[in-house]
Amino acid sequence: MTVPPLATAPDQTVQAGPTLVGIGAQKCASTFIHTALGAHPDAAVSDPKELDFFSAYFDRGYHWYQNHFAHGADKAVRFEASPSYFYDPRCPERLNAFDPSIRVICLLRDPVARAYSNHLHEVIKGHIPPLPFSEGLANNPAYLEQGLYSRHLGNWISVLGRDRVLVMLAEEISAAPVHAAQQVYRFAGLDCSHVSPVLHERRNESDRPRLPALRKVLRAGGDRLRRAGFEDALARLKTVGPVSAMLRANSQNMRDVVPPLGDDDIASLRGYFADDLAQLPDLLGRDRLPWDSWEAIYGSNT
Image (cartoon, rainbow, N blue to C red; front, side):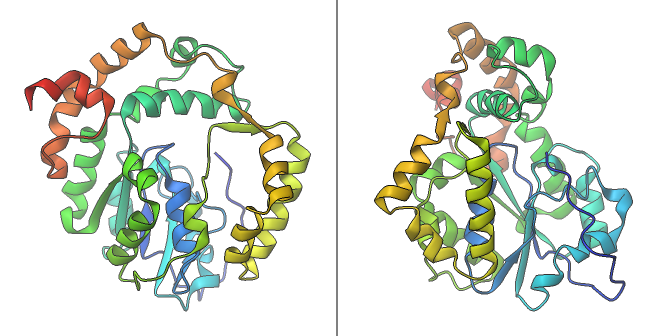
């Protein structure tokens, strides 16, 4: 988790907070949603993406939080996404007290796949060496805690109500990114006909740079182009042969470094999540879930 900056000296006149907040579990496509909204001409997104205000930095106060949206005060939609909100039981009441009109996007993913991706993320961040999953899990119970979707989502719905919560599945976002972006736009009250080239980019994959300094320079340049309004041009630039080849050459897939989940890991995780998964379809208004874990546990019964 990147600590959000103190920004500038707090401006006590700033009152433009977010209108939309992403709360999905970690490693569930929040970067895509942030990018899709950042590319819309009538929306603004926070910088950095994850402010963690309602969880980790609540003591910094409302004005600190609002100042991160001052650049988008004239936009119809202002957005930030902090996965830490999803499973912190304090966050729904805190968000609702701050502004009872804020809408929320909750992103979910097969909890077994998400737990493994969470482990890869910890390795990429350098928090742990490339250990097998079971050793990472022994060190970090949040791998499991974040995957108890029914428990955490039920808490949010009980405070905000169903109408203010849009639940999306990462697998469906990946399969149809433009459709997913338009779904977000409609929920936020934006023109859903807008389509940007950035919607077709793959983001936040489980990789790490072979040359971290090179990635840092490239990302800094990309951030400057985005702030200048050249997001679409940047997306097209990344597809140019030499640029695309350089980006691929500097990327190391962590799934080639960290051992995959073993059969015992998968069975253990499915057993842990089974009871919570059983409650989720009713909460989402679905008959079934498009997840391997769901099919393995309940598929034959539906």
